[in-house]
Length: 389
Image 1: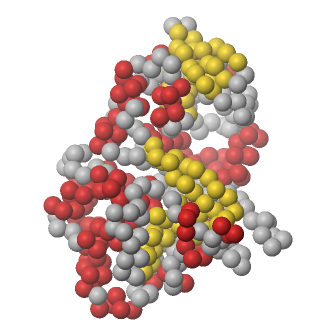
Image 2: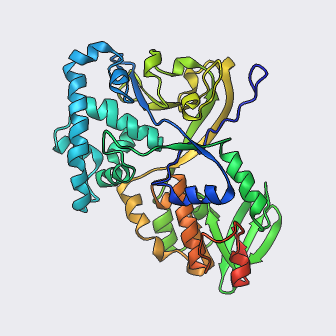
Image 3: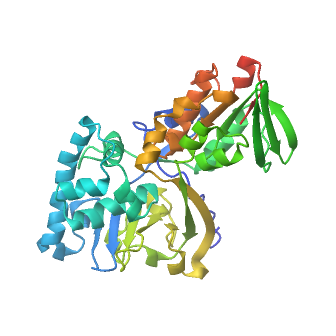
C-alpha cells in the first residue's frame, strides 16, 4: 500500500506466453485465471561508457542520438543480426561442449555485442553473473532463444502476465484441489525402504507409499538420508545460486533517460570484473499505474535508497554448466527409483513451464494424465496409494 492506494505486485513469477508455456496457459484457462499482454522490452546502461539503449524500437534503440554515428554501437547491432542469422546452426551440430565464450571468440564477435548485449540479456534471464554466462553451453543458450522466438527481430511472441499476480492462481488451485496440505511444516529427512518411504517433518515421522520432491535439486539431495551414487552424481551437479532481491521505488536504479526505461533493465558496473545486475520495472511489466515506479532489483541492494525499500527477498536460480546439462539427460536413471520422484524447473531451462512439465510427467508415470476434466489432484485416488509431495 502506497499513499492510500493498494497495489498487487508480483516479484517472482512474472511473464509467460501461450506458445511456449502451453501447460501453464492451459492450467490458467482451466482455473479461470486471466492474463493480460505485457512488454518484454530490454535496456542496458553502462557505467563505464555512459551507454544507454532500449531495444524496443529504433527510436529507443538510438535514444542516445550519438550512437547513430558510433562504430562500436553500430558494430554491436550488426553482430546482433549476425548472431540471429548464424547461431541457429549450432542446433544442427549437437555440440554440447562449446561454451558461449568460446563460440563468440571463435566466430569473431565484437566485445560490444558480447559485453553490452548478449551477456546482460542472458544475465537478466537467468540471474547469473557474466562469468557463468560465458561458461554456458552455447548450444543450450541458442536452443532456448530459438524455442522462445528470440532469434528474430520481428514476429516475436506476445508475452503476458497473470492479472493479480501469482497469488491469483495459487488461490484458484487451493480452491479446487482435494489434497491435504500442511503449511509451515518443513521436512528434515527422508528415508526409503523396500515397502515405503519414511518422512521426518515438524509433524513427526510418517510413512508413505511414494514421495515426490518438488523442490530444488540441491534441496532434494540434502533431504535424502540414503541418497544413491546416481542421485549424488545427477542432482549434485545441478547447482543453485542465491540472488538478493529487493522491491523498491528508487527510480535511480532505472536508466537515466526515461526513453530508455524498459521492462528489463541491465546495469553494467564500472568494474568489468563485477557482476551485471538487473532491475525490472513492474509498472511496464504488470501495467501498474502509480505516481512512482515499482522496481525489483537483483544483487544491487547497496545502491538503493533505504527509505524506498518495500521488501527484501532471497530467490535461488539454477546454474547451468556442461555438467548440469549432461545431468539433465540422466533423469530417467533416478526418476521413480526407490519410490522417489523428482520435479523441478532445473530439469529444463529453469522457468515455471519447465517445473510444471516435469510435474506433469511424474503424474503420468504414476498413472494420472493431465489435463483432466477437473483440477483435482487424483494421484492418491487413482492408485490407492499415499503420495508425499
